[in-house]
Image 1 (cartoon, rainbow, N blue to C red):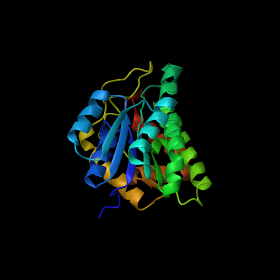
Image 2 (cartoon, rainbow, N blue to C red):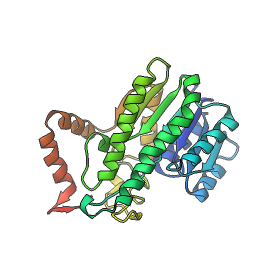
Image 3 (tube, rainbow, N blue to C red):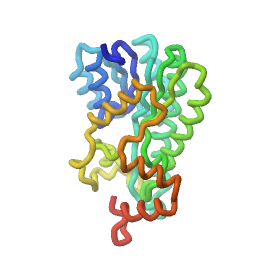
Length: 268
């Protein structure tokens, strides 16, 4: 029997990419799943695809505190409790800070950090009763600041710090607080990434075909939850980056610069 069978699992941002793959896999494993997103049509398609299963969808913007409260209330009204929360909803950006409007950074922080805070705040009392798990989908950008992604890096550093503090606060409750850091994954996050004017760029500059699939990413996240890990950095390259950034940060600076810049221009 699956570890997730009959568990109530909340996944934010479940209409696309990693979130959608998480929903699909969890349903296959017998979980009772609730997910939210801003796109009603995509959520409706997801609900229709899983008709007859224990899935509820809810149109919500995680950067809105009231939406998060109402979403969690709907989950509890339907399923009675929450065992696992996966804070997956997120947005990225690509622009040099010098050229970036502050609204871009604010939007990224509102979704990535405050969305995580709001959903965790409202779901936590139920998760404590179940001795369950709170998970955040973070990034290597939460360990190592990346050029062209100042707001994204700031939001993921904030998420990592938030979860690290919360983990210690909850150590004696039986709740596991963890964060995972996927590498580059095929998803809509790069197409939806904000430009310097806080508008979606609508295209990805990267070779999506060479990346980890959303389905494989979802499987790794679920394995980490089942094992009640503290953190999980997915790729060996990212693990090396974290290690090098702690050990010799000046060298990490040069390598990151080389990766993200060509002929002095930001290319990724």
